[in-house]
Amino acid sequence: MSDNKRIAKNTAFLYIRMLLVMGVSLYTSRVVLRNLGVEDYGLYNVIGGVVVMLSFINSCAAGATSRFLTFSLGSKKGYNYQQIFSAAFYIHVVIALIIALLGETIGLWYVTNKMVIPIHRMDAALWVFQLSILSCFVSFTQVPYNASIIAHEKMNVYAYVGIYEAIGKLGVAYILSIGIWDNLKLYAVLLFLLTVSISLFYRYYCVKKFGSLCSLIVVRDKRLYSKLLSYSGWDLIGCFSGVARSQGVNIILNLFCGPVVNAARAVTYQVEAALYSFVQNYLTATRPVIIKYYAGGEMDKMIRLLHNTCKFAFLMFSCLAIPIIIESDYILDFWLVNPPEYASIFIKIILVNYLVISITNSINIGVQATGDVKRLNIYAGSKVFVELPVVYCLLKYGYPPYSAFLVLLVGTIFVVGIDLWVLKKNIVQFSCLNFFLNVICVIITIIILPTLSVLMLHFSMPSSLSRVLLVFLLYWIVIAPLIFYWGISKDLQRKIISNIRKKCIYDKNRICW
Image (tube, rainbow, N blue to C red; front, side, top):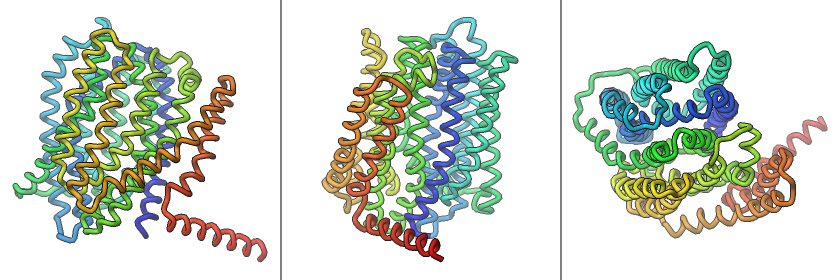
């Protein structure tokens, strides 16, 4: 199977999973918000955010694991997959223990002494915190198994698990509506059990499908541990930046604005996570191919795929993000009936931010493939030490909550230039000028006409569900031919036209017969 067909097949499996999870998540968010109430819903998300803040170290090790396992499959140097898998597992176990210790000391102190939590909900908040730590522990030790599935490009597994996850979340929403116990405690317990069951399945599948590759052995190779930890160590700054930008801002919002604004941020996160999964699924499918191209020394193919990944990631996300930005007020009212204050403006700013992030995340795959992530994380990651103090000062001096997300947007735009410079330093064949002309200029040109078209429609019709549907439909109709003629290469255009003609001739002959 060709690389393009394999990417398309894997992306299709991931989109099946995403559509199921997204549909259920959006529905259950409405049910959970109604059953928990705005205050408890905000508490759950901000307390879980404290644990995520402590677990950023794990994200770094996860990136290292995924990169090294995929590299071992594409490299011609015979890297030992089983040794990498086992060493990564042991590293994650140690990390899990360290994070649990930090959570039960620093994290517990912060929740009980610094967070804005109503006295009568402190007991339930501690339940959420403890179960969040346990969930993190399970997730940490799960990383090598998930990385193995991605490295082997078995994306259909995620589609099957997505069905189970969707059914599980529907079940959680139903049980909450019965009201048999304190809903906040019950919600935390049920989500923890769902996380554990999914983790157990992934482990069983990897051992069953990949055999000895995912069987644990004793690894005494200090150089291997050193490589994994060195990669993770430099990635630490970048991981901290990503987590601190979201969860750090969430904590600062709690300090100055209380759990009600955290509820607005939580609603925004649901929309953000659901929509960006369109991009993330595509990046997950292309990541192993890009890394394998680099491992095999095929630089031209790698750069060409990297260009296409950036363009398609941005344009795919724009097909949902731009119509939602324009119609966010009506969509929130229709979805949640009584959405939290600031939710609409949060969504608008964050979706613009994620349009830019779709480009930076695509570029980062190329840097990660080289294994030299030192420059990337020093320059791009350290910006968080500027962003969070600025956010803190703005909110302290009375600026509105959405100013925090404007700061993050400015920082993300700044990072695009840094990422391109770092990629050029690592890959000599890469040209920043060609990237700007073939990617940035192309995507900006493509989205201008559909955006103007839907804006004219938006202001010419009264607010209604019909207008929302027409905005989406018009954007897709206008952007599709623009992507075909400007977004893809001439060779790919000819292949698509040729396949359509062959299909039409085949169908015509079959009808005549």
